[in-house]
Length: 152
Image (cartoon, helix red, strand yellow):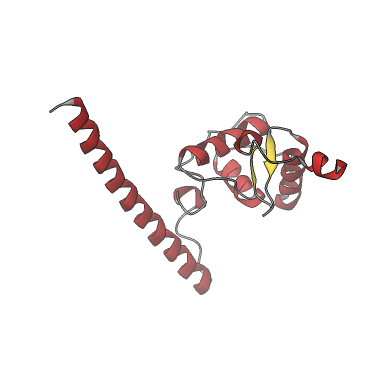
């Protein structure tokens, strides 16, 4: 088999795999939705559902342990980008950080999310998009920062 034929066949199988993964993720979300409606515990963690705005794959339970917050967030956002996803919410970032073993200074989730939001806002490598989600500043080269908008 020629190199070009191999690459073509491999690409077709990878596309088939993405279709199946997408279907599995859709079914897991449906099962979780049914559990929510029934008031039962969720069957699948958000980190196990890797499409429709999720983290982009399974997160190791120690992946962000000991990492600085900005580094861990950058890792999550880069993983999402590689999976063809974009910006995400503070709530989803928090869930992914917790799933990856990140240790917040507070035990209260509301305070941890507030601190995360403040850190994202203050760090110039992150950018808040109009819908409230956060992505990497370099993803949006033509976007004006909030200080640029305030100056106008």
